Image (cartoon, rainbow, N blue to C red; front, side, top):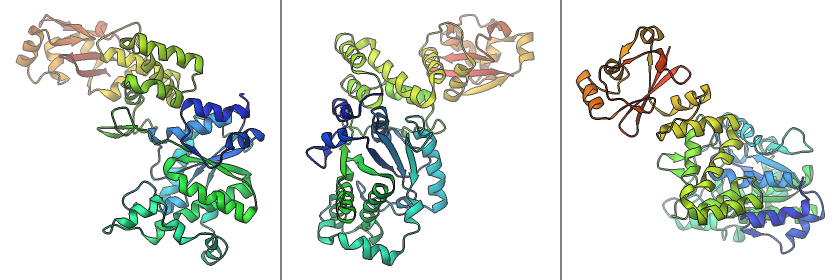
Length: 427
């Protein structure tokens, strides 16, 4: 385990720090083991890549001896944070926020240890917010907030300037609840650090001030930069939408490909932010980018590390094998995991084992699995050099396909042209 006093410098070197609420936060962090929290909005049953910076910050905190506290906003999720939003969110039901919170918990456990309260905590603020008495809350908490100051916050001011949309009282009260969260966590779990995106600056300051007023204790905050790619696009987004941590929403293969396509200008920054590779290894990969960019060693390391954290080493091996196959290569034995990965990424069709045992003409097979629309189109495809069986070009329309052509567990890979694949599953 790394020392607690090195945590701030680690965040600084890796590019996590946008701002701090005090000039001597580094000293405050080094004085003792701190409990530090990040809030996660349960608007979906999965986090996405845009959530990874705070997740990784909590993981580094634990690795440096501090205690991470992940707070799922089951209570505040019923309201919605106006920060960074141009319109009001659709309100979630309590049942839906609880369901989403459970999905988020399973993902967070892949990044840091939540096996005991001493190692790390995962809490849901519905536990205390749902029990609040409104009149008591206004009397005890609301009196510490100035409306004059609240409307100066960017998250509120921007919405107030939009006459067509505005901001509801529900969302306007969000910062009181988030400040109360920090107060509750400080009082009951000795949490003295809150971390979040730069859009959370005002909310963090409100919590820090409330703790000082009501508990007479010191607390601090750290904010992370809002990440954009070098091309100006929002990080973690594709043309299809967000890249999710849930394998059912974004497959390990597609996640791997997302990281693999990282631009040279971004890859070292991402290695620092999203992997646990040490400085020495990242420095080596940085040199590779500058000296041999075509080798894309840094991108491959980034893709393997990030996909492996979430989905495991076996999934990475399967994805790398499938990726190699789908880009025309075929090296060594193919695992069942690789076949499952391929089946999730390319169209599939079934063919009976008995039919292959007897032998089936290549032309008939191409039609059967819908690589070609007709026998004439299949022959034309073969004669034109565009038909591939297990990534080997086929030139004989009279060829018979048998069980000997099943080169991977329970499947035959067919291809039309350069990129149109079809997986024939042998049943």
